[in-house]
Length: 226
Image (cartoon, rainbow, N blue to C red; front, side):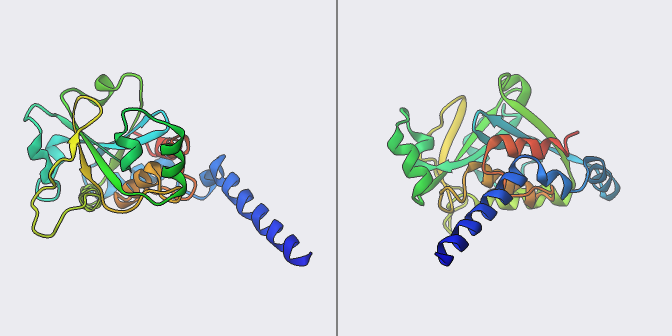
């Protein structure tokens, strides 16, 4: 009886902590948006990265001129007209499926599965290209931008002798491709967790734990928007 009571209390504690951070408790633990922006401005010229929310999925967008091709050589597969690149990461089966069913959704969440990177070349500004999506511009330092691209590069399942990962297939919209991803997808590491990891690599103070949903992730990013 005592063990059951202890297990119930532990479960309630875990759920309570998650609910606290998910519904805004993280707001009191993180630096203010102005503090972050001042810190970026005081170090060097502020570069900007974009966080995009498509329904329950999020991704990162960078200007083409900011891309370090030694880190992300996959830009070679895209035309020179691309002014921006969108990066997304997710479950290989679910992300590439033409028809979504319950089996794919359950498998993606409950079982660790292989992953893919979805890369899109945008020939227009993010807001013009994705008029229905929520887009947040976040300032980062030059060093933060470099660290972000190191993390993006590590998201591709690149063999040591490969300069660029060969595309698996065409992507789901626009000029895009899927590439084999590094790391497993699961309920403990979703596309939104991945986006949080990318922002954290860039020096943006994001809490990964509550960022399981696109709503929470974009809400945290908005705090530091400019």
